Structure formats: structure tokens, C-alpha cells
Image 1 (tube, rainbow, N blue to C red):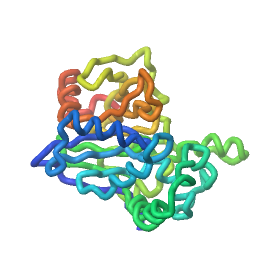
Image 2: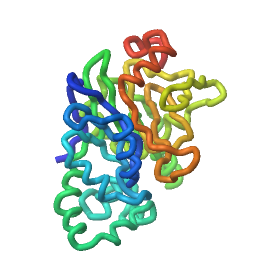
Image 3: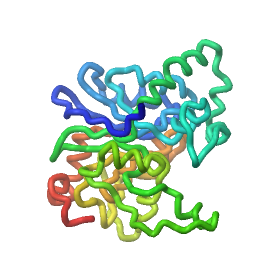
Length: 289
């Protein structure tokens, strides 16, 4: 049975961290966990998905799913992996897409690793939610892979190509009240593939702030009314971006370049940055939609 939405309580005994797209970069994550003195008995780590492909250790990143302190949402690369192994179907992608997008590592597994993947790790992937919600107002936050916006990410484009009627209904950013199993079940492609929100940003009208984790580009519409802070990845960027309550934190770690990194953010630190740059934005977002 597919899990669309996972609800978790606030962490009353430790810290909550959110990590960007891992893409097999387990070594970078381990270095970050050491740097922040991550306490596996108290702290929690939330992943925005895309554990696999492109980096050197996809299996190592998948093994994190066994850890009680690690929580992940499904990303498009996990979805392609499941499609490749015929554990999930899709109208958007097929099995060869997985290999073309960095999935060649599955051909290099030995027999023991193949059994481990198919018998243990793939079932864990199938059980991953599309969205995790942590806590309650005013401390609530969401974790998703791509975006919380209704409608399929490319439906208008493909409908036009196929000569089909284009859906003219408005595509809406979700609110906290809309983040339900029923709503999410009807927009899974958007949750893991969408890039409509990030493409709406007008960088010339945005404000850049400095934080302890690097620069954040904050759009003129940083907050969407009724939607709590939502961590997402999927789109590699040269800096973090906040738009429509979505904080984009994928910094392209797998590229290992001068302008890339693996972000591991402390939720309390992020709330501190936002309080310093807005008038109590995390408690009242009604003026910015």
C-alpha cells in the first residue's frame, strides 16, 4: 500500500536536520554528520529524496533507510529505480530512463548486493512517503522532493504536443490543510518531478541574504498563505532559494565542484534566519501568497 503522507511529532529531545539530494554521496553526508556532531540517539535527519544515482555509493545511501534516525521522502530517482525493477508503473517514464539518468550502478552489483537490493532495500523504498510533515503550528514543516503544487508537471506541454485539450484549470500551491493522502495521491508526478514553482522566480526582484549555511535568494513571494516551511530538492542550484514557502536546498553535491556542496540544515537555525529577515513569518503568512 502506497504511503502518501507521513506525520511525525516535533523532536523534544534532540535536533532535526534536513539534507539535500544525496545522489550516492554517502561520504559527504558522513563528513557533515561528524561536523555537526549528529547524535544518533536524539537527533533526526530528513532527506528530500534522490538517495541514488550519479554519486559513488548508491547502495550505502539506500542502507540509511534502516536507520531509526533517518527519514526520507521518495524522489524521482527512487521512482525510476522502482520502475526499472517493475515495482511501480508510470505513464511518464520507462525502465531505460533509469539507466540514462545515472542508474548504471545496478549493473555493477555483486550477487549479495543484488539480493540485498531486491529483498530488503526496494521494499523499503516502496514504503517511503511522498511528503513528511513534522510538528504542529507554529513549528510545523514539510519535506517533499520537488514541489507542493497541484496538476501534473508537464501535462499541458504533452497535451499540446499530442493535440489534446489543454487543462485550463488553475494549478495551485497547496496549503497545510491540503496536504492529505487524498490530495497527494492525485499529484504524485508533481511531487517528484515538478519544477514550476522554482521557474516562477524573478531573480531581479528577489533579495539575497547571508546565512551560516550560505546565501539564500528570497523571492518577493517567499511565503504562500497557509503553507508552512517546505524543504525540497530536485533542482540543483548555486544557492538556496525560498519561494512560495518552498526552500530549495539541492546544491548539486554529486558534481563535487567549486560551487556545489551537500547541505545539512538545522531546522532551528533555518527558523532563526527567517525570523531575522521577516516580521514573524513563520506564524503569520497571510499577507504573501
